[in-house]
Image (cartoon, rainbow, N blue to C red; front, side, top):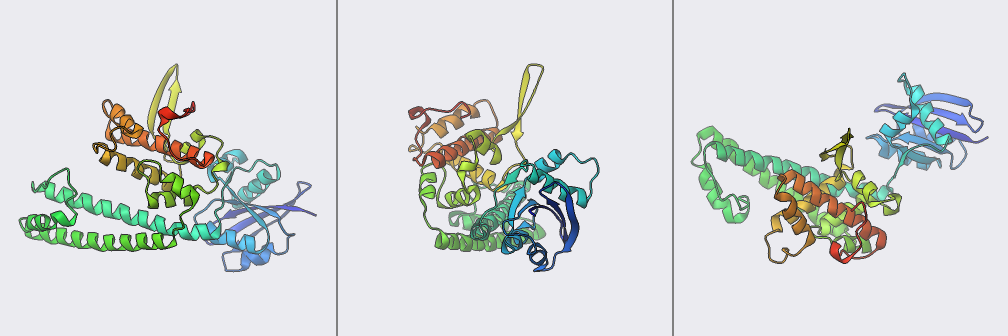
Amino acid sequence: MEYILGCDAHKHYSQFAVIDTERLLYLQTWINHEIGAIHEFLSRFPKDTPLALESVGNGYWIVDEIKSSHCKPQMAHALKAKLMMGNVNKTDQLDARGLATLLLNGALPTVWIAPAEVRDERQLHRTRMSFCKQRTALKNRVHATLAKYNRILPRNSDIFTPKWQAALHKLVTTLPLETARCLRQELELLNYLQAHIEKLEKRIHERLEMTESMQLLQTIPGIGEILAWVIEREVGDIQRFPSALHFSSYAGTVSTTSSSGGKTWQGRMRKQAHQYLKWAFIEAANVIVLKHNHPAWRSKHVVKLYERIRRRRGHGVVVGAVARHLSEAAYWILRSKEVYREPDLVLVSQTG
């Protein structure tokens, strides 16, 4: 007899439902999250028994235990799966059985499960991203504190570079006692974070093996080695996306749309998206914003796109539009295995 399994995973336990191929419920049970317990339970089933698992934060080790028991995990898109199950009531048993039923019917909305090595390497750039967010927050606090007392350094320069360190510390001495003390601690923490970011970048370069995909991605304006590493590690197999629009939506660079009565409104970029890819393409777009006045960049399509939209829309909209162009360019480059070319030299898709 062949079986189909569904797993509703929680923090401390997982609920399993087992259905046989004649669509009969064979078993419902829950397993405590003890190392080896899931492996022991699943080992009783035939090799390559399919198992539907909802995408959860603690899914890495559960996937590894499923694979070690020779079952075949399929990660479900949590939101889409819940909508398709259509349960009025919400219980662990219903969720587990619903996942198994979707898998049995061939209707399970799946997401890609990255190999263990890729999942491990992702932690490097994801941790760097977290540190960079904290660094930005600290810099914003420093700017805000200086502005409160009208202590302003040139707005078009990065005041945290070595060039401005002496002037910055001189400004700190002119602030009230406790404010100056707090600002010095923030600057110390900023230097500490910067040192750890540099350590992570060094480790990334040590682990980085320059693949063909990374080399192609670096031909896109604004994308360097680290962003190419991030995009390749997070994308996986580009063939799983049927179009550039699907990929851009997955990466969160497509704006929300509301249409009614013949009127259409474009909103903010989608929040339900792959946050790491979204960050990467926005970072690349910000590089273009910073360099748009450089003579070597003036003739580039991305700069013309930026300047055209900037005349009538705000900074956030401009960055989002450039990020979408970059994400669509990344899609076509990875699909065609060709270098980036200016859009007026190639055919642009209807979704581009």
